[in-house]
Image (cartoon, rainbow, N blue to C red; front, side, top):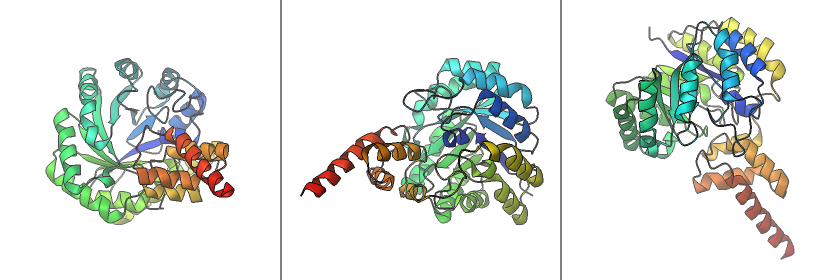
Length: 338
């Protein structure tokens, strides 16, 4: 029976859904409870990773160090992870992570720019961290290109390689063919990270597992950016029915989600119209930026998201929502005055 490692992202991807306003105490309280349900890893901190608290991405309610010092003492079973975007997180952030009990450092780049994580992966290894590569927007490259960049990440020293459907726009067959080919042609374990903008996060994660993935990202109640991530509860049940093994206690996961997470969620993790629009291939972190820009300029955030998707914008370009909203407002005004 194949064992699937569950990486809980409730406290990191869920930070997006909280507008990065998890307090250090809230994060510690939730981490202590999540640690009891049997997940293998817990990733936590600002939604954009260490160093992400900024005017560009939104200031967190606490600093990276405050989160680390709050979470580390209460987690005794799962391994702690942080994620870093090269160019944002630094060696000092990694050093601080090591000093506060973190054992896994994940590095997210655009797939075709995976080589910019070379130094970060090397530094992480020197510090005793286990480096993983996270390659977003895999859907927009061919299967062969996906394999090539996964192989490059393996050569750089990544010990787990993730394919990430950050816009929730992939279909199960697209996930399967990419994961299957990557698993055949690299020697390190493969992981998958799904978003639920087309309500396919569980199906896509199952497709990834069937194709050979042994690491899957998931959140309690799917609590994450945009329409959310793969929800742990139904996913674990589906894995059980398909004969795969996890360490997760399904009842405990349900109880922790209901008792500890649900009361502090700012809104239900339900599918809204603008979240569906992320299926055009827009990374989920764009959603709140599009809503704010739409409100400011009096345009439909769905139009903003669709325009961004057609332009092929990627993670890290969220501020372009302002530019797109302004352009759409000018076009709207011109039509009204015609």
